[in-house]
Every structure is written in structure tokens, then in C-alpha cells.
Image 1 (cartoon, rainbow, N blue to C red):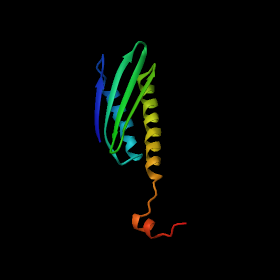
Image 2: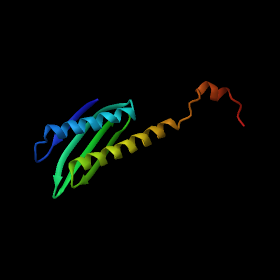
Image 3: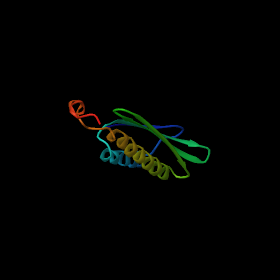
Image 4: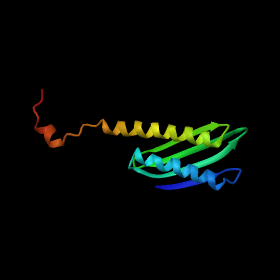
Amino acid sequence: MNIAITTRGYKAPERLKEFLREKIKKLDRFSDQILGMEAVLSYEKLDQVVEFKLKLANKLIITKEKSDDIFKSIELAVDNIERQIVKTKSKFKKHDNKKIVEKLASPVS
């Protein structure tokens, strides 16, 4: 998975980037269709903001979280992305997996 980390208004320390990469890599266990991830770290007044753009094969998931600590913001954003990935996967799994030939051959009631 491609991971792009962008900071606005400051230079992120390597420790923060490594923490972010580790959290993002854990998302692979939720879906094998993750193509890439863009993380934007910034400040809004006193809050530290994390914005994630996750590119799946069939969807783009965007989340934004704010808190007083950047590490807490990352945790909240990762949790939010996990929930959205699971929700997206469940929507695609609900489709009927019968083959069209089986549907045509079955008697209509």
C-alpha cells in the first residue's frame, strides 16, 4: 500500500511518521483492496487535525478527526476508517452469489 504523509504548518518528527505508518499498515487486515492512503496532519487553532483519504478499489473513504494531541487524533481517525472499511465490505458481501445460469434455471414461484 502506498502511504503519503503531508504536514501543513510544521515539520513532523520521524517518530510521529513512524507511528502513523504502523497504524495505517494495520488497516491491511480489514481489506485486501486498499490501493493507497493519504494522511494530512495540520493545526486548526488549538486542535491538532488528522485527515485520511483511503483509496479502495471501488471507493474513496475520507475521515477527519481533531483533538488536543496528534497521537489521539491519529487513533480516532484510524478507528473511524476501520469502521468505514468494515461497513463498505459488508455492503458488497450482501449481493447474491448465485450464478445467473442457476437463477434462470430455477423455477419461478
